[in-house]
Length: 288
Image (tube, rainbow, N blue to C red; front, side):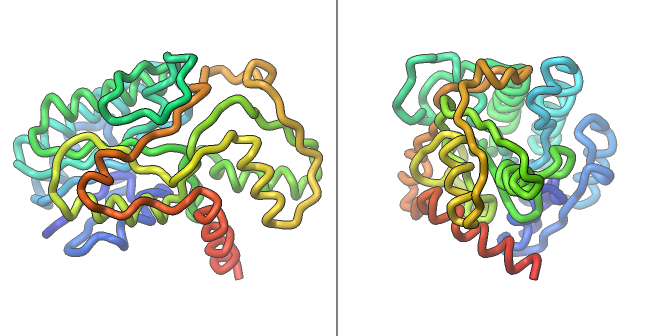
């Protein structure tokens, strides 16, 4: 079986690629840019994959508010073309999406199931939801996988590192750190998500799935857990989202239920606390 992974140079793509069994071709943005559909089509027709996995995305959440056309060009229109191409090639398209397709239900405090109606608050979330709809409408053989708060040892490219790395960098600089405590989600380790995604892909069962670590926390609670585990004394303050002043509005609650994934008899991902421990160990091994 031949897999083609778009966005193979990102933190999720780099963890997923070695976990796939078969002939795996990883394509970085320079080789398959979703804003250049002709180049993507040419690559896929040349490679003739059985499965295409799209880990590529425009994920600059705040910047998307001022450049929505760029976000939609990648996350929606580029994905629309990819879905059509995979349909024509009769291959399975696996497309990664986000918990940010939720958030409009301000009073929500129960994990979102795959059957719950979405309602994004930001341009980024809107563009990702549009991409989901294109995949589900245009490519008969598909898996759409929503995940949340990804962090992995390969960082996250243009974002300048993932949340955990950002916290450790700020701690090293000795700066006071303010982190929002009114956004509940499930930070997820890319190695765990990649392992679970590979198992899900192997089933060949199409549909919409949620894949995250188990449990939930706020970003402040995650930051505190990072510093405690690294024995760092940090001036850490919990603040409200309104005080942080980000350009894009985030969901106050975007914990995902992995019900559809579990229904296939696949094992749940470990608790976010245990995943964080594993990440910090892997990070240390990579640096030593």
